[in-house]
Length: 122
Length: 374
Image (tube, rainbow over the protein chains, first blue to last red):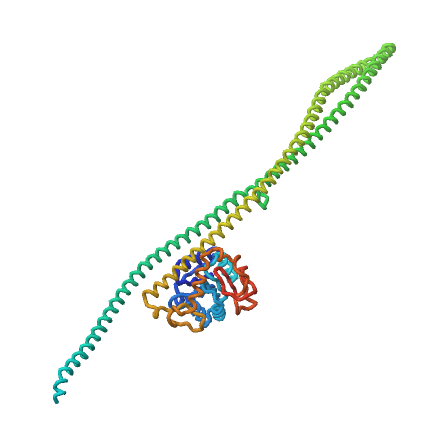
């Protein structure tokens, strides 16, 4: 059974993402920062999609994506999409180089996030 | 020596004055340090108080935002559930599998038409049967007339035989007996023939009544069929109207659900903007409480942004974040339809955009609501 890991330090944002992705029928797991997200992604092989914020305490989203790429987790089929207020092209390129599959700028429309996740799931 | 003696008091006074200034300076410095310390403590206390107050407000705002998000989600789910129920109810009027009300009406009308057709055939067959019976009755009547004539002739023949037999005397006696028997048989045949004729005569009015009633039934069936076909046409029109109405209701329901989902999507974006602003405020409160140097900066575009890299006030990434946080407050700007058709720099041709606002064009940063898939 596949799972989606939502990593964001804002509980409101995690709630919004959870509600937006509920129609997908996929189980959703939450993490409060990059370190927590990295631990959960490494520990649970069922997680195959990560929705990842950028600006977080302890470990930011770009660092978490780079760590996942380095550990080989992405090579095992993990898909990462960044969900952030940032929109600068250099950051986007860095995320792309780290293996991320997409970039969504907050605030997002629920159907757009769902479409992006479904695209990755298929 | 006198000069040195005379200058001694002045040297003493000068030494006293110099020593007093140093003490004063030292005292002033100590006072300044104490004052700074006091101000720092007051500042820290004020910052802590402000942080606490703002933190409480932000927490309450967060709780309220979560609740609103919950309610919005419930509204959308209730709307979808309602539309599903409407679809189910309206679907009973007309369905693709032909089980709807309109399809059933048409099937019933078709069955009645088929029944009327069968009834008409049965009536025709009955009329034909009645006509055959009439013909047979006529043939029987003709036959009875022939039999009557034959019995008359037989009776005459018997009388003649008896006359001739009487002329022959005793030799003719057997012929008299035979002739008498034949006369008896002829009379029996004649009586039977009369009964047959009477029966045929009784049958004729009944056959006429049967013919009249079947003709009446045939005419009534024809009239009913014509009337029913008119009503079946009206039923068909009602069925078509029901189908059209069902399609219209379902279409309106789908449009309404789409509008509700879209409106709730905009509201959810508004909530997210509120949350983004709250996060910015928390960050500002951290700046206020912990001191500028100790607050980690936001992620920059540099390859190695681990830890704080300097005063946040000078960190460039804050500016675009503030812009992207402020811009979506105006919902029209957040709509992908209003964004400029352009493509961020340094992207490859293979990048796929889910948002229809992004296409090849001039460089720009992604905006609120934009989605880019690599």
